[in-house]
Image (cartoon, rainbow, N blue to C red; front, top):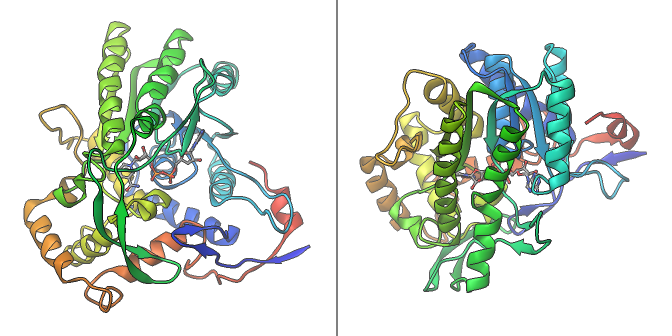
Length: 401
Ligand code: NAD
């Protein structure tokens, strides 16, 4: 059966997928890493949340920059019929595997719930039986709307909201390409707790505990979780909001994990405060798209604009495995230093003050770049791949994950 891929933007959510575009984007990311050359990094990597943006970028960087075998865990859907051809993350994982294996690397995908006990048991059994017994890097890059707690069965839901007071501002509707006023009411206590349960550090710690107990970590082991702080103008709904609290919880987990690793003489746990990039999540976080189109405009001009792969490859090769780590006084890695440069931020603030409904799509901002990067996530607006591509469903179904 022949299918024609189509863009299907609903608000700021892309419901369509172009598998060929996803494939080309994987090729582009691999090429970027290869162009930067090799680095002495990890060799046996587990990426939790491996199918898109930061997790995928970390997997590509370690595989093609450091020749690492990788295990990727993600929550995605494959092709079923012409109406359900699956998610971009599923194709990213399938094509990554294809290219990694062609290069002689192991690339094992686990599709399912990383929060569950079952997934931890299955991944650990695979590490022990088929992956050489140990891993030297675990990247924790899960972003999820919900979590079923593995011990209590309680379903927690995350909400990106301010705490204590409503936040008002403007946002971009990517489907209709208009600016709109947005008011986000403060989170309820249940939403605050839910976000900490889903996006905090408990599951990260559970993974490391299980791996430690099963003697699956090397002596030079490292694990990293990706956080965000961002500039003052985003603090009300991010850093000081529900997600910010969840990240603080993850930082507490990092301290506990570090102690356990030290006790066992097994390396270190890290928090990397990452830069803002265009992802599925950043497009639905209030006001963030407006900040992005101003920030990207200025960073593009400076030559410091980064996509997920550029940012994570820099973090891994220059900071975690390189000679230029930049830590803050709390011991967190700060590759977000380019984004938070005070001079740049003053210019961003000034530019944001000039953006309005009439000019936000003009040369004044990097709206086009943001929109393109957003479409790229689901395989659209990719150079060399028509948005409307003819695809055989059977060919998609033959892909192995
Ligand atoms: P993303 O939505 O692109 O990717 C999330 C990944 O988690 C996907 O691979 C998805 O399949 C996986 N996942 C979700 N639920 C899962 C589950 N139950 N089991 C297994 N896998 C599951 O997210 P992202 O933007 O790359 O964010 C990753 C991390 O980086 C998050 O912690 C986020 O807070 C952080 N971060 C993001 C930004 C940004 O600008 N996007 C900035 C700083 C930090």
